[in-house]
Image (tube, rainbow, N blue to C red; front, side):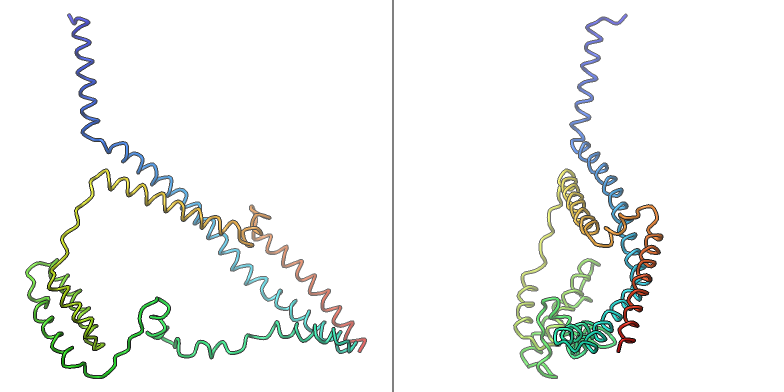
Length: 282
């Protein structure tokens, strides 16, 4: 027969066991929070990406189907302005016609601006360095100086990857020798000296690994930052002109494109009639 005291003792023992189990896993609640945040972020990212694809597809189809119609409207507006100016001879009409025609002309000098920046293979190294805020340092001479050659030989003898016994050390040496080779190719004595000092100082001590709780907190911070970035992307998409058009027909955006095209074709007919009338009056 079990006494109340024994039952209370059993309950207390169970409570202690539960407390000890919880104490043994203090980061368990963090793990649950991370898993929940990960799932929420996945769903949010799916929603943002779905919306982004719709906006991008609508934008492309808008340009493909309606772009030629808009271009034709712009050309007709210019021709109407020119025809009106030719008929009236009014200085203000002539000015408007010139400005309208100039708005359709390509910007002069664009190819000249790109000259020296890229070719069929892409950006030149100097241009890429400038765009990425890297120093543009072409080699100063074919053969580096004697001092550069001396520094290079010393570093190559000390840091050659073949001297490594372990894979990690070999990888470290290969990365270092790549930098040495680059400095030598540029004939950069100062950089070679800096590399010599770096090698003499030895490898950096391994960083202390964070605790499980610290890693979980870091993961939560990353998830929060990622959510904030996605929120910014979604806001930009929602504020775009294309998204505003999509909101006019959320259920059938393709039909909306057809309706806009019909309206533009009507505008084109009106402009063509107006131009024909002006030309006839001449």
